[in-house]
Image (cartoon, rainbow, N blue to C red; front, side):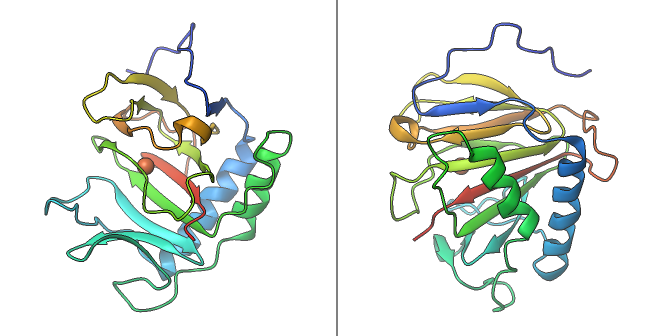
Length: 212
Ligand code: FE2
């Protein structure tokens, strides 16, 4: 069964902006196609967590830098540690879409140099974590959601702080910046079978970052 729409969405903390249904269906399809092109060069795989576990989401990257995690720890690299090859270039459809999404927001000058792409098959999740491997926390992280709906968790600044859940659906954008930039966040649940995109099972998140 699909998620029940949030009729009364939670008041989001300052610095978090949820742009609901901002991507047209053909744009979403194009982003899925472009992701598949990226994954031909840098395939999706399950990275290792710091504690030696395996992420249930599969990851890859595009852009000048990519985020990776293995026995050497969490970091941005200018080459895919698995192949030694540079990360694939950020597709034009990624950067053009991001520019359009951010036009009219106070983040229209955001110029990411990295995009971490997570694929969440049904049943995958992502534990609460902070994104803090970037050089400048005044820069936001912007996520585009494609495919299956998910419960996104927004926590506080301590892992044990209470979190709220936000339903994110295909075509949504989420900006985490300002005083919320370092909030713990995660994915609690993927709603199986809810992808409206014929070429995508599960959920893709395109998370744009300024690594350097
Ligand atoms: Fe994150």
